[in-house]
Image (cartoon, rainbow, N blue to C red):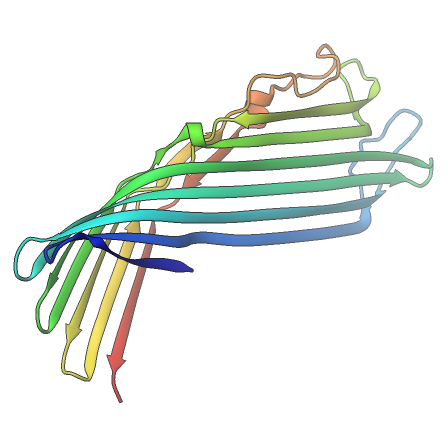
Length: 277
């Protein structure tokens, strides 16, 4: 969905001011799975517990929601009879949520013992960023040309924030450094974390050639630069695993719950042929 147009109360025949509001992204993904079968996933314990294959039940679910809206204001100027230039300031609001749940249960039917593990992850953040778009266009009777460059975004951290949460429980699953069979509990939730989401530099160009009043051809492409791996949301330091660090290696939330992102280089291109019947 989009809405755009000129602001008639500003500018003149060679200077135009415009506005634009459009959705730059929306997606909702839900994935669920379940597995039941025999597999040897637990090492044999004292007394032949978990000897051989266990009956394994594994089920999980992922919910991911993304929405993004961009608002922009543009200024364009006619610098000659056929050529114009312009600049647009774009502000984007991004809201992204991902929830993942996984459950594992391994049952030793011979000894009637079970080992279980549950993982819950909840990432929720919103981010505001700005970028600039510069453009140039040229128009003749039978030919139209245009090109734009969009700057990398600048994050407004004061208008962004996020929540990062994860929990893990494990019963009868692990053996600690002393050889004892133990349970594990790990959990942390941090709210109001700073968010730094980025969008890349891009370049776009297009051409339209009019063969006649009935026939024309159009070509356009856009290239997005890659973004190497960076940190979107950085939790503060906290002992994620609540067990005694003497027997279980501690893990820090600032490392384990850190949220990353990256982007590969992308090229989009399209060709259209138009003919009036």
